[in-house]
Image (tube, rainbow, N blue to C red):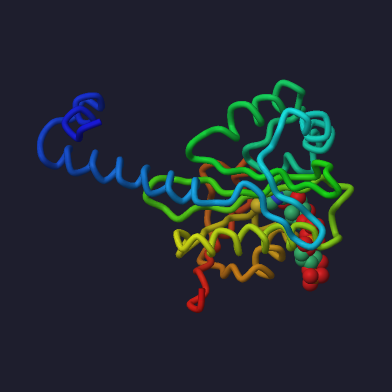
Length: 208
Ligand SMILES: CC(C)(COP(=O)(O)OP(=O)(O)OC[C@H]1O[C@@H](n2cnc3c(N)ncnc32)[C@H](O)[C@@H]1OP(=O)(O)O)[C@@H](O)C(=O)NCCC(=O)NCCS
């Protein structure tokens, strides 16, 4: 689509509007390139990360329907129904601005890790793990695999993440993976407005 058509469809006119539309379209394309450069499958010593599939839905619903996960993840509904699981696999996972991987252990779905792409901003890491699997170093291993795969593309110079200030487990996972705190504040998408969110970032190692 040309910039003129982009501007018209957005109801904008003039050179400034054209420049804005062009910048937005370029940012969207850059995000799409980053997403599409990631491998279909990432293997780590214990895990395989791959696209979520319909066969994951039963385990996904069983594990995601958990108040302890809902309380720290703004995007997860509760109760988490079979319809939510199907929508995650069939709609959310197909979006051009999302790249979730199913984390599998011995071919069984146990959680999700991946990136969200907000135009003009660095990709944002997000994840959750089924409660029976907490405390075994699994998310650290999955995140390490994902970051290595992303950095290997050469298209991920900077990544961001955020976690509730009270979510010690998630902050530990991120800091162990090399993320540094950049600040904190209210989060427009957080469920609990009274708990601040910690913002973090990680740059690609210079030697990669
Ligand atoms: C946060 C979460 C992903 C951690 O996954 P995990 O596989 O249990 O984490 P790991 O075992 O890799 O732990 C990494 C480090 O964090 C520490 N840690 C993990 N959970 C912790 C907790 N609840 N409290 C304190 N430390 C914790 C571990 O001890 C480990 O440190 P170590 O290597 O020095 O021992 C998992 O608990 C989860 O999915 N929680 C709910 C969803 C969520 O919080 N998502 C992130 C939203 S920002």
